[in-house]
Length: 457
View 1 (cartoon, rainbow, N blue to C red):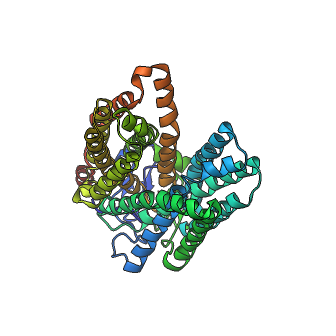
View 2 (cartoon, one colour):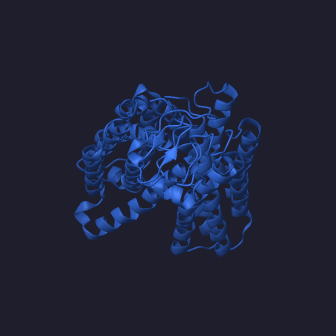
View 3 (tube, helix red, strand yellow):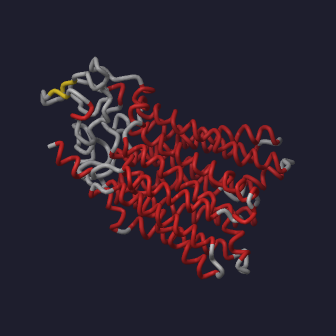
């Protein structure tokens, strides 16, 4: 596979009856005439070596973009309670972030393709920093919830833009390996962030946590300003006659962003990656919500829950750093997605029947292996399915699916466990859903991207 970020042929946007002329003069008469989005258009950076300074800046950008969500995980609920919130207020303060984050992912993706990555990434860092500082300054629960909602909007734009920036600069043929490394880096955030914040909160209070996180977010804005540049063009600035990655309508002009989003969402690889992401993150949410119950059920100490999560995170990082993450670069992203979902489903079934801590540990490690396979495959598939002109929208959809899975998984599984006590903790039904999804993707997948490219030639 020859192209991961910064330039693939555009996804098809023309009706079957329309005719469009490419740079070389060949006429495409239908959607099926367009080759798979794997070649590198003029102006993209994927065909050249990315400077080390840029790679360091990209890594720092992704790390810092996720740090606030991870570090504030043990802090938001105590701060809301400190302001006088009851159980409903605490739940609202925690959940409103996801409620506003989801639409911000999609809207942010559209803005990224219209105004450029760099400006929106800096804006996301700055607005997130202001929101985090606001957590420590507000004095009432309604204001705290309002600030939390604003943080969800800023965070949605920030994470989407960080992924798009990374995708634009992925080396040709390296989507899986690149996003595997990025995923391992993000995994480190979730290992380091909550523990650091909890220790700082215990020693210095919640205000110190908010100050540290806000400072790191502003540092992220500085890193982007110094080390990241936009690729040579974004959609509104394209010359349709000279750039093959423009999102064109039948008249040869850039099409409306809302239509571009619809057309992108109709691509089969994107649909499968988004479905896998919703189900995979729903499973992650269920694991986070109910692993404690499973640990207590086998008679182990609650303190070991953190150790199991660490095992899961470490295995996921090792898999993402391994050659397995490069399966997407061989045109086999869907193979890795199916294998990863299968690992996650089997792990959840194993937890259902676990009667000892070692079984839970082995299942957690298997869950981590599944995560390590799905993350680079899904993100790589999303990046490959889009051009630079549409990659913001593509990652907006991905992050919306990410948030949707986390938001839906725990409450739906919890409601089922409440209705059927024998299913508590609800690992069995969740595992079955994950395995059914893996089977559906396996049965409906088309030819590999590599064979599609060969056929297009």
